[in-house]
Structure formats: structure tokens, C-alpha cells
Length: 77
Image 1: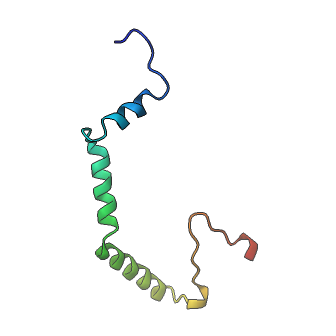
Image 2: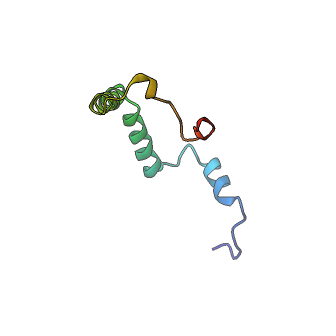
Image 3: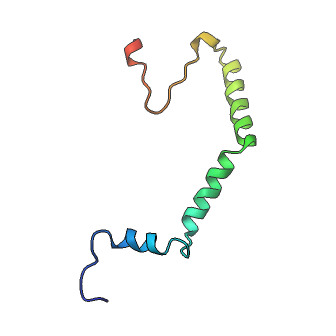
């Protein structure tokens, strides 16, 4: 359209320049999903499921660990 290739950061500059008037259906839907997943009801449901599984498998408190996605117990082995 302009007769030349777009520069490296032209898209991000465009979005930054017009961020008040742009609307992303994808991002709005994603925000809604995150909002619903972060609700009190979803946390209660998750902990009930975890609690039931702990009871079902007879897991004792001394065998419950908290490891996030970056965590590791390799040094404990």
C-alpha cells in the first residue's frame, strides 16, 4: 500500500498510538476467562476437588508439597 515493507516495530507503535480506540475481541474474551477462573467460587471448587483427592488417596499432610511451575525437588532426592 505504501510501496515499501513495514518497519520492524510499526505494528506495536500503531497499537500504542491507537490503544484507546482499538478493541480486541480475543483479549477481552481472554480477560473474561481469567476473571472467571480467579473467582472465589472457582477457588472453592478447586480446593474441594483437591481435598477429596487427598482423602481418597489417603495422603498425609507430611506428604503434601507446594511446588510451582519453576520448582523442583531434585535436590531432595
